[in-house]
Image (cartoon, rainbow, N blue to C red; front, side):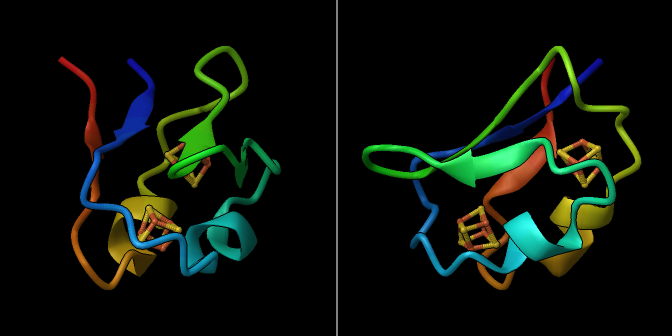
Length: 57
Ligand code: SF4
Ligand code: SF4
């Protein structure tokens, strides 16, 4: 199950650097996770200052 970035993302970019496989990039309104590439390590969720990242249901 991949992780997902919610609308509360403030586009700070912290998670992009935290992802070990480069699955996160800047989208139009929020940063976005490539669900096919994500290995669900959770590093991005731990790094996000506003808690905008969680495991998708
Ligand atoms: Fe990258 Fe891990 Fe976050 Fe998936 S859970 S986007 S692999 S940091
Ligand atoms: Fe958005 Fe959180 Fe990533 Fe910053 S760390 S770009 S607030 S999802």
